[in-house]
Length: 101
Image (tube, rainbow, N blue to C red):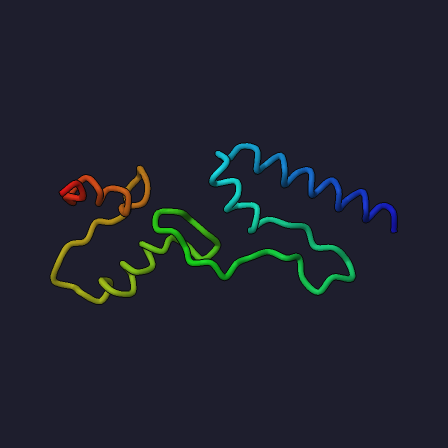
């Protein structure tokens, strides 16, 4: 139906508008994750089998937080602080590691 075509085009324009907020490099990565499902197609072409980037929230959560929960969660005789009110603890590691040597 013609009203579906208009709705699909509106949604595609909305996606373009949302992507404009991202820097070019991030926009290219995000474009693969946003699309509109059209009737008659078997899927909407969204690429979702890409590994999570540590520190970036996805529908599957943060990769760093997941590894902390799975790997270090069962260890009870130590204190772990990984997430705080500012964001993911992954990004705080670079300040404590000597990557410049």
